[in-house]
Length: 361
Image 1 (cartoon, rainbow, N blue to C red):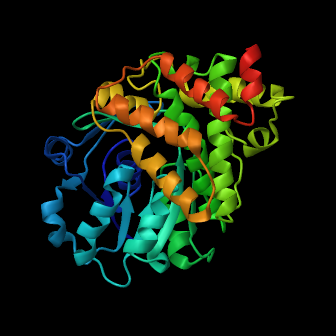
Image 2: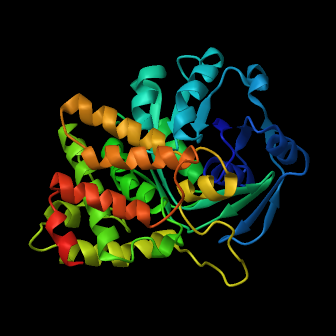
């Protein structure tokens, strides 16, 4: 298949580079001109968990999309708030046979369904770490796997070919429940956003019981939205919905234990001793503190709230988190543990399911 990777950052850039190394026909499309010049000129430099590599790749800016038409397989790996605009820009160069792959968070599947149609959409859950450090320089973070699947659950020859090509990057599995799979990551996203609002290192963000209870409340709300949508969530290696569902004010010990032990495995990947990682936290924290740009946090939470409203599920604590992250992005609120305390106060005042544990921790 002929691939067009839209977004050449820590997800799309790494996968597309390894497909190129494997002999696949890959062209990157990215709107950051300096990054495109570096990629198309000197190639991409990879550091991190996979060692050091220098790979020659093809890259263009969006104004050259016409030269790639008709698009065959488009892998979209842009930030959530850019998804709709990116798809609308691609449509004139696509045809009825163009396949669109979302290498993004769960809420983006709704946008794909609306803009390009469910019959042309493949969902994916890229469960690994990566970062765009500087123009032409990508960093591979914690290694893991990718899940892919058609929205209707069908296993087609093109889906199987996509799986085979993605094996150049790493373990890739097909599922007939891709919506539930990517929405599980999306539900977990409320906890990821929470850890980006403090000035502590990501691995220490949830070290207090108070912070873990706030995380529990946020994820419980998001799980309720997924349930309202009729989605079947599936746990993965560092997230399991079960402790969040079962946690009660009388016994939140299981939830505390799960968050405390599973979180560092995800956010603090030390990797090979020969590499000092530039990115040591979530992509949200990376955007706020390193790239100095708008994060995906607001887009994720807005999408969650829209979905919640569509099924009549209240999400007051995620609404409060959205207000905090928007204030941070506008420069009106600093990164601080005080942000956790403000959310905990709201949970106590509004009577969240776990709020009584806050009084004793």
